Figure (cartoon, rainbow, N blue to C red):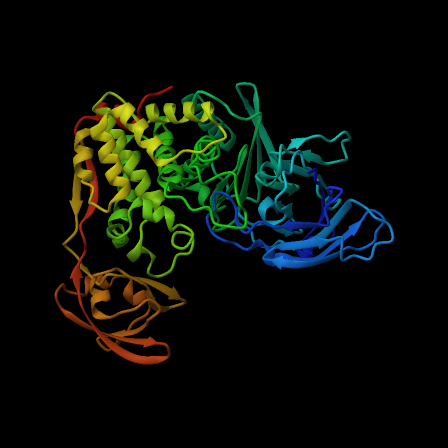
Length: 576
């Protein structure tokens, strides 16, 4: 089924995208179901994009309207048999408006400055049809001048913006940026890489183009192949933004416009670039069986996000070390942050990596005050598990890059079929042997503690610990102006045991009024093993709870490098 889209933005201030979709039904068909996806590949939450659709209409070529009814979330059934047509026609055009006013990498945003069009949230498809070679024509306000997208440009005239894709999946997997954004680009191995930057940053000393190019050159050399004809980086800079979403030959990136001036934050930006770009291989091509082809109306549950995001989270920081944007000390600082975050999550004792993955639709992408007490991020723990795997493989003069070679060769041999768990375990065994494969399997499927100190020692690094020396209440505060409440009470911590709940507003401690400024240095004034009376407001009722202060849990203070050469060799792995 051939689809032709025409999208336009008559009034950017209304935040509405107008979509016309023309197609032709089979001769004997009387019904077609048009649908808008409920979720986006790479972002595992039912986002129900259909909630933003309005003014749906359907008509044949001469303008006569067709009968339709909404039959599901974002699904509209057009019925020729119930339409009083004067002239029979197999051609149908549907039209609708989509409200686009949420600037994230998995939603669409339109205002007077630009339009960011995220395909799954805007472009309908036809249920149960093979939708090949769709075309999309883009019309936009006269004051705008640019369109940036990974779609193939088939425009015959300069003033026409017409694009195509191999199929519907590829069409909606290519975000579109429209406006007056800054553009640039570079080539790697003769292949164009486009850059689009929306928004401003505070003045800084970094060369984004050169640094992105360096990452692209290194990752493509590591993976030995470039699987695209063109690649597009779309970046939005605005205060407080952070995030990214991978696509087949492009990525959408968000970053805080104020944060670029700081070197550590800039490294975090480069880490994000490396993460999303590496997804070009891992996820968009190397992928679990459940992640493609997609049912856009139903969750695609998999127990293998340790591969999709865990491996990627390990590799993005490895790439930053390998490209020397951080030295060994900088890499170890990132590992310290990863591990201390991991140790602060009691949920690691209840959810294995596989459990965390399977529950991504209801846990990771729908966090609440109990999330850290009940589950663990497969990004975080997955990255740490691959770190351990890399150290273990080094004992065999191998590394995770050797595993990547097998994963990529497997994809090229059978690109249409995703991986199953047993294949990955077999590849680990092929690289490192059965003992390492069994240990890797255990780290994926159980909640057994991992002795990270042991693996750092194997890599020539000693761990320096801290903790147990400062008084601690065991909750994370949040502030509304000067007023303080509980954001999260750590499982089995002092606050949790004493009965403090998330959302409790803390009015006083031991009868003394407690505001933001007063709590900032509270550890100077409290003593471990002493009882403190918290006066709180819960659901509008004033109550008191008693909390016995504990001591801070054990955390990593830093690392001592014993054998720098060995550590760098292991942490960098095989270089291209």
